[in-house]
Length: 557
Image (cartoon, rainbow, N blue to C red):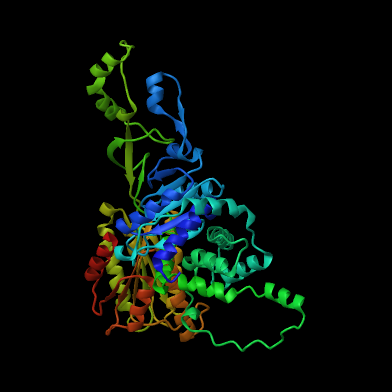
């Protein structure tokens, strides 16, 4: 496993031996000659290869009405989908696989019929394979750091493959070996229960390919390295070398049977962990973890973003498409596409009396784009002596934004955190009259319950998402919080709680903006903005107009 290309060859040999048991391969690499060498090695799989695109329709997967044949014959003609027969499914641009398709493919992989090769070309950390698929595919290969000179043609011996497939049903893992794989997965912080099962399948395939009559320690280590490496959670504790454990007491039994029994219980769990950790570089583990977190954050975004539709919203030009359930035909555009071909089709058709001859390629579907309302949530620090100035600036910025809101379908909301807790002063609204009435006479002063302000802002954003809006949180403050969530003055706990809530805002994928209105920029606020993954702006003498300009630009991004 020290040779990166040797790991690639081992993975392909195991996959070719037991494609149904391993479920498939997650191949992360840009298109190029190195990836071509790997995909060429897939010819050894004992399954026909079928290529999928992330936009593949359900009828192509599961089968359905063959519209062209139906129109040509005059009676319904059904066609089979790609999942009708066992196949090696090659998913191109797998990082763009939508959640719906990922769920359908995951369901298909749960049956021992198909294997999936996910070609992940993601350039950024958050461009990665959907969790539903990455959890089911046993193998992972990253070719980013492998050059063409470090690779070679992959040629698996057909006779060795045939012998391995014949030997595979006779190989089973002992309960101790299964227990060791399970404990190693737990120690590596892998939450999925599929991982030990896939590692067991990989160990069996590894042993079959090596020609072993039983599962050896090398086979277990090979299976753990292939399956656990990219699933390992990069815990901070792993960065530090664990202290040397004291040597076990010298209790070598004299009895031969006891020695063999002791040997069966000493499955090298530590060796499996080390093999998995050594399989991939640590920065790749962290990148994969960041990609999983970013994908989870995006998927938690909820409603409110701009989205395509076929029922309502701004109409877009119609396009050719398939008659899927829920699709709406643009009749005029369809007739316009079919009209030029009528003389030619009538000449080629026995039924010359047909009024109109429409083919599947003529069908045009309506498209719409819905744009949900946006809401800017002001979380204003109203504590201390500068509260009145900040509130006045925020009030002025809100009124200026609302004056322009009708053209952009914007809403605004205001909450102030002061004293012991935050308070929602203005729910999301577009009413300028109501806003002026609510904002009049808002008091200030007291401590800085920053964590309470973040908590209320997050709750307001969640409610806005449930109503189909797209929220953005703008935090105006000049210092660190000193009031905990329970209202007690405790600066240390208040900072910890504010950090935790900043992470929750980031995880919710809610856009945010931190505006530092202190006389001098505060490093703690910059750190909080980084945790929140939000832009940080220092505006020590911001007036209402400047604030509205900055926040308006934030809404446009």
